[in-house]
Length: 394
Ligand SMILES: [Zn+2]
Image 1: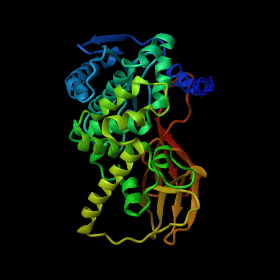
Image 2: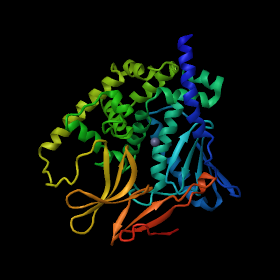
Image 3: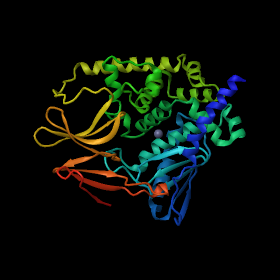
């Protein structure tokens, strides 16, 4: 009885964010002339004016169906993919209640070099769909679906499967199936490499859940490395086996780590140690003959974790950067040649900032209208001399 109470109590907390995800205000405005394309495995729903894009996206999705499901081999029902072109946010997701994927047809303005936007979305999001289906139609999840619909299944999936797995497996897939992918980028795993090569091997739970005290990279690179290691060590099917096994007892909080032990002989925490040991040895070998570029450290001391992102040179040895951290609001700051901060404007850019000619350009969302998918994205310019002056153009 006590155990059942804990499960029900946990669900109370889980269902709130799930509603936020499934039934939020991210709606398209009325008046759109929606069209559909049905392929063998997908139903694409899209505004009429992007029909050509939708045709291309549908072709890409079909082309990727077999590679995406090869190592997650559960033949899924036709998946609805909603293309939306009214948002300023470059993103996509897969969710349940109802089961669907949504792709925002607005590519990254800066910083993406992975080829086409739809290729990138498809190769990542369709893997999430395969993960979901591997879990949704097995074991006790079938009972949860009968009792509480997809919302129940979603609650158990969120509770039982660590986030590093969802995203690490999807990033590995995007890397394996394309010529790009985050796994090929040096800065993607930089945080984990830096920790491991400086002797900071935190516990599995700290690495997976994060910390308010120490720098812990987000779950994407950790998951990518763990998923890659296990596939190399135990074969490409290992994660499908672990997911299938996890769904057998999908009310038990430790089902994922037990399934991992059943399939590989190693609990998730042991797998983390193995993976980090393996990669650390590999990185140490590579580091041996690496010429180190000399550099001058401008600023180090910080009580709390602090980042100076997108640093760009100003005059007289100064730098401008976006300062972020857990203890303060993000701000554009100027560091002089001794690392002293002399200028600070609170900003929250959507992506990289660009500093040129005595000013800074960046993209901002001025405000979110009632219909979440009609956000207007604007570029702003800050002139450093007139610090309150802003100039914007749509
Ligand atoms: Zn993802």
